[in-house]
Image 1: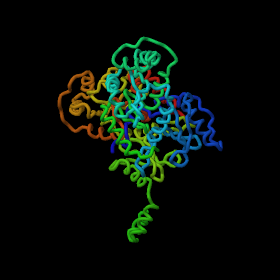
Image 2 (image 1 turned 90 degrees about the horizontal axis):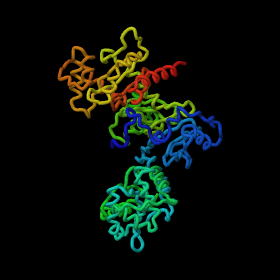
Image 3 (image 1 turned 180 degrees about the vertical axis):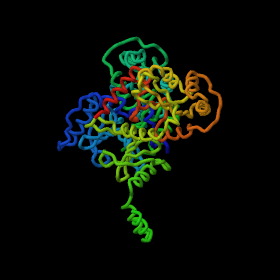
Image 4 (image 1 turned 60 degrees about the vertical axis):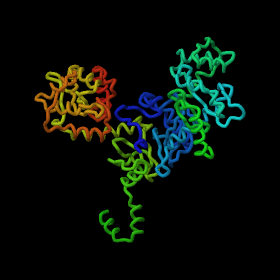
Length: 263
Length: 249
C-alpha cells in the first residue's frame, strides 16, 4: 500500500498539479483583493484561484467532499479551496473510510466528459461491422511504433466488435514532423486511407486545412495523456498502451463486469 | 488526563470505548486515518494547522493534512492564498531547521570562508560522494566561500549508490576530512577506513526530514535552495541575500 501516499515531493521540489501549470505565480502575481467577506463562496474561491494562477480558466466550482471546502476543476485538474478563499490545497484527497482516491476519481469523470465531448466528425473512426460491442478512444501518433502495431491489427480489432476512435496526440508537439503528418492525414481527401497509409510508413503528402490536431493535443495533455497509444475504455478509464486484440477484448469484458452501471 | 485514563480502566468495557472515542487525541485520529490507507505507516508528528478542519501531520517523512474527524487525508501542498505562503514548504523548513539546529559541528564537514572574508550565510548541504551534481556543487566551493557563504556538509550516501556508504565513512575517518571530501568530489576513491562516525545517524535524520536526493541545499532557516540556483555562486548569493532580507521584520 505504499502507493497510497505516492511520489515524494520534497527533495525534488516537484509541484503538484497546479504547480506544473503556474503556481510560481503565487509569489509573483499581485493578489486580487480577497472576497473573504463575500457571501458567495464561489466568488471567493474564484478570486483565490485567479490570485494563484490568473491564466487558468476555471471549469467548475462545486462542493468538496469535506465540509468548508469547494472543489475546483481547473485545467482538467482538481484543487480544493476553503469556502472563504483563504486556503488552497492541491494533491490527492483520500477518503479513509472508503479507501479511495477521490481526486483521481473526480478527475477521471472530468476527463471522460471532455473526451466524450469531441464530436464524431473530429475523430478518425474505424468502426466494427454492425453495431460495435465496445468503443475505445485511442490517442495516437503517426510516428509511434506501438501505435503502428495497433493499427496494423485494426481489422482484427474491429472484427472482435471493438470500434476504435482515433484522436491525434503527436507527442513531439506543434511544429514538428509528427504533428505536420497528423495535419496532412487529416487534410487528405480520403482521411482513413491516408491514416492507414501513414501508419504503414508512407509519408503523407503535406497538406494544410482547418484541423483539430492542436485541440486534440491540448485535450490529451489536459486529460493526462503522456504517451501513445493511450487507449481509453468506454467508461473513460485508461486501459493503457498497446495490447494485442484478444487481450484488449478481455480487458473490455472485465471492465464490463466490474462496472455494471457507469458512475 | 492520567487520572481520567486510570479511572476509565475500572469502568465497564462499553463506557471505556465511548469515553475513549471522546478523548481521542489528534495523534490517535491521524494514526487511525493514515493507518487505514497505509497500514503500519509511521506518524512522526501531528499539529494543528491554519487549514480549517485539518491537522498537519508528518508521516513517513512527508507532510499530509488530515481532517479532524479522520475521514479525509490530503497528500499534497497547502497554500495560504492571502499571505502568499506555501504552508507545506514553510512547515517543512521549520521542521528541518529545528532538526539541523541539533546537529553539532562535530557531525559536519565545514568549508568556511577564510579571513578576511566574513561569513554572511551558512548552508547545510546533504551530500553523497558518488553523486555527480554533488561533485559539480563542490567545484564551486572557493567561489561560494569568496562570497561569504559557508558550506556545512552532512554525509548522506544514497542507497542507489553502492559503495557510497563506505566512501562516506572513509572520508569521515580520514585525518584531513576536508581534503578527503574534496578529493572524493573530484572522483578519487577514498578507500576504506573505519571509526566512530555520524553517517548512519545523518541518514536516518535525512529520511525523517524528507531528504531524498543529493545535493539537498538548505539555508539557515531550513528552506530549500533549488538546485539550479545552487550551482551558480552569483545567483546563490543573491538568493540568500534576498531570503535573509525577507526574514527581517
